[in-house]
Amino acid sequence: MEMEHFPQMHIRFPPAKEVKLHKEMKRLASAPWSSQPHNPHGKPADRDRFYFHRDIVGDEPSCTVCIWRNEPGHWIVTNVVPDEGQVKPIPIDQYKKILTNFESDIAEPAVETIEGVTSIDISRYRLEVYFSHDAVKLLQHFCVTSNQSDLGQHLSDQEKWIEFLLQVYDDNNNVHCDTFGYCLRTEEWWPEEGIQKLVSEYDFAMRLLRQSGR
Image 1 (tube, helix red, strand yellow):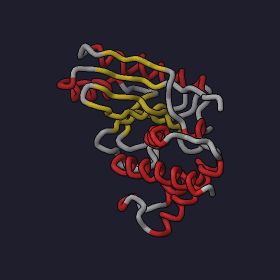
Image 2: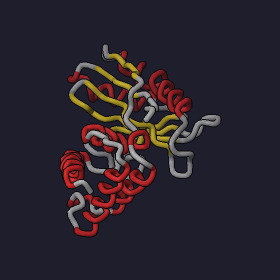
Image 3: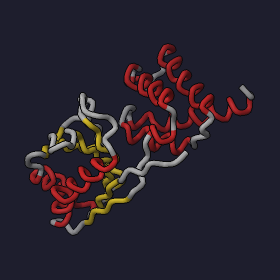
């Protein structure tokens, strides 16, 4: 399968200056940008997540830039999520332009004030690249409709999860469990603290199904 490469941005800075950096980025977020307190799906931001919203500019959709605190002194822009009603996914050329505008308008001038740096690479994990359309829809259905407070432990939620696993196996894509985890983290459909559990279950299920000869 040919891989489609979407960019990912890194923000590196002295860890002790994180609060100052975040304040400066919010100060620089003037129209069409704004700081956003919730994730792209309207839920409260997790502790290690930051969001900036961008209004429609020309033919580019309104969207949310999602930032993940990977470790002290290192933030990663993991995703640019179009607003509800906009074209999904964002075409790669527009995606790159939005990301570079975020860098030039907000991230770069903010990080320069604390002697940090930004960089953009071309590698970003997307579910649609590695999994079939049917598998992605089943995973999204599981994540969106399951009880996330108990990380999907209810029997009906487990049945939805198993449907996704069986679809992935039947698609015969042989997607590594780490890649699945990276993709799921990018989408932000599932609580951060529950992702590793799904990755482990995914890995076990794929090995079990292959050995069973289903």
